Length: 438
Image 1 (cartoon, rainbow, N blue to C red):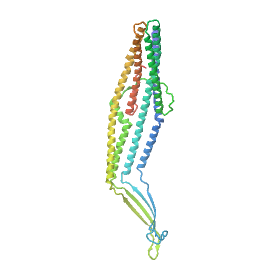
Image 2 (image 1 turned 60 degrees about the vertical axis):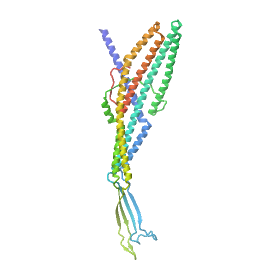
Image 3 (image 1 turned 135 degrees about the vertical axis):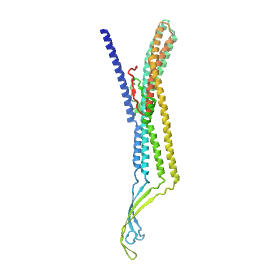
Image 4 (image 1 turned 180 degrees about the vertical axis):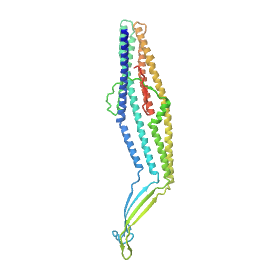
């Protein structure tokens, strides 16, 4: 009874330890990737330049609704050519000060400000779209590094196994129980793996350089091996994901703003058929004139004026209407195309996620354990001359390929998830299975 109690306690302790290790690995992976994404969004110079450009557009919006500066006028009126600096010899001579203000037709200022504001808003959403794209690229590079690291680890393990196979083949050949061709086959497979190792190391270096580029840090910065992670499960339905995309995708909001800008431009084009007005006020300072020609007390005078432009250039205004209508149509059609593309990507991503998930389960629960058993059986049979070396070698190569495909499927699952999040425009609420094998 005591023995059973001890065994139960040991099993519980081991289970707790395994769960804790998996939770710690998940935390490291999440924190590391989340930190890298945050670094990319904070330090990327392209995003900084785009942000500065958006602020430029936002400042233009504040200017668009403002009135033009008033005009101040100073003049000397009706001066005598033969005595220009004398102001009391002619009754029409005066010193004049005036001010005028251009006033657009009612509603034009508000529409111009609305157009500029919508243009700035569209550009702001374009920046958010670029951030989603950058986050996706960081995540994809991260998971590609994970698959490459795993492939390198598998190759390293298999190189040691091939050394063992080569030793066994040489031993059997030395005692006359094996063929020399077996030694050559083992050496050839080892050389193939070394060739693959060289290619994967170069691929990892390129991926690390790409990650450093996205993070805007020195290209020589070392990228540590990517830890294992459990596969999260997507809980949202297709309809929910489409609704999230319509609500959160920045590119959708950008095109909506562009369509709104086109509608505002059309309303402004209609108002361009109405005249603007210029309001002016002038005040004349006159001198007393007393001479043989005139006797004027020199009272000061003022003038009020209204000046209208004549909107007779109908061709230009019709072209403005056509331009705004085309802009609205273009933005609307692009929006419909984007919604169609979003729907396709969501359905395609879900299909890829389902496929990769099933492949991971199949490799973990069926193919790899069976391949391991088959290889072990072939190794035993080869030692007692019941199986030839080629069968043993094929078993090892098959297991090698299955192990690589397992980790590639895990990486592809996470990359498909990253693409889905970029399509939807937000991080998705995911559940992590309680029991996940490495």
